[in-house]
View 1 (cartoon, rainbow, N blue to C red):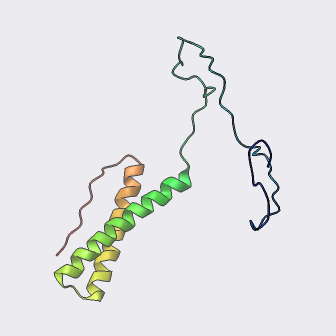
View 2: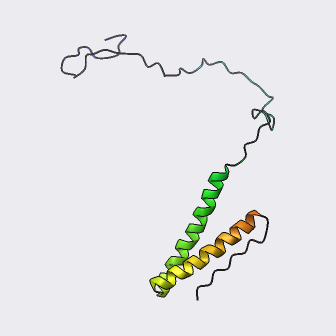
View 3: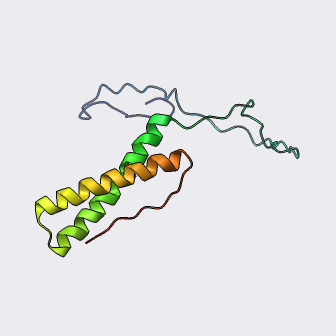
Length: 118
């Protein structure tokens, strides 16, 4: 036992009884309170840098959104009783239209998507 910490005897504990200090414990600061009324400026701490979004992540998210729309459409078509061949054809057509509209959206074109459930 060291400063009241640890086992009184190591017998029966399955350990050797060695007590080591926790080197990663961060002790709280003393009770000093520093009053600073300045606060932070709007751009303070960024050093004038702004991060641009990762193009690969944006592309992955775009593809995920397209796939989500197609899964919803597939569920609707299955509920309506279409055959597997008709569903595959309609999904392929819908994928082409959605991808075309999302690419035109990135280029600044119109953003309307029309999917027919005939």
